[in-house]
Length: 169
Image 1 (tube, rainbow, N blue to C red):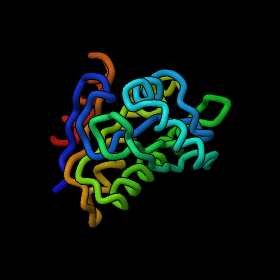
Image 2 (image 1 turned 120 degrees about the vertical axis):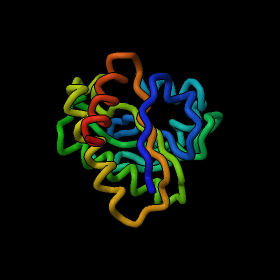
Image 3 (image 1 turned 60 degrees about the vertical axis):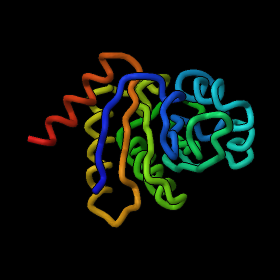
């Protein structure tokens, strides 16, 4: 059975089989989540990703994880060069990230709040969408056992925890 866990912290310090990067479709790693993953994992994570790009917005590809406490980084393209995103893209990128993790044989995957940094998407809507996609995905045959949402800052943590708790009632 797949469990969902909410944590506050830095995703680059999370121990999971796969860590999700909130990527642009060209897969270069700038600031925010991507910057943290590149800083800890090393430049090779970005170099491998860029060789696989560009990809369609909403798609996800995997790379090695460099020095991160993970086996893979899954780069979910939640925006293009215009740095904008929307609900359809976030849902698609979340589902495609889960699929890549399953294809890789992962038991655990950690997500940030996709699209809420540079993309400017609402935290509340993001939490509703992403947790909803994970719950739907859990109804399928999956090898995943744990989905961890690692949120930067107490406000983001609270929003995701409240959304998770709302679904348990």
